[in-house]
Length: 143
Image (tube, rainbow, N blue to C red; front, side, top):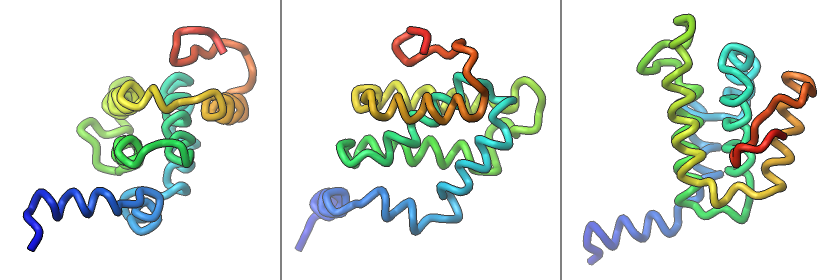
């Protein structure tokens, strides 16, 4: 008989974040993510959208460990979840909690954000906002 710890470790070992995302449509879906980014992107700002895109594309990378993908799924779920600590429709401060969660998640998984992920995020960011060159990457450099 497995102990609670062994049972938990077995579940974690077999956990597949991508299939979990697919089966939790009420919390997270790619469509809900894109709807949120399109709906609040301008309000949230370029930096928050860029960091959200970094998380999105990092979660899609097969090189990223499950534990990091779980952090990403949690952060992106919070981003799209309709009930926030501070509702998104409140001007100026409504997206602060979302941005804070996104930035915290990026800092936790930053070692898994490679150039491929950055390039995909940059390309998508340019599609949303245009190419004015005023984007700062996660290492503080202008994109």
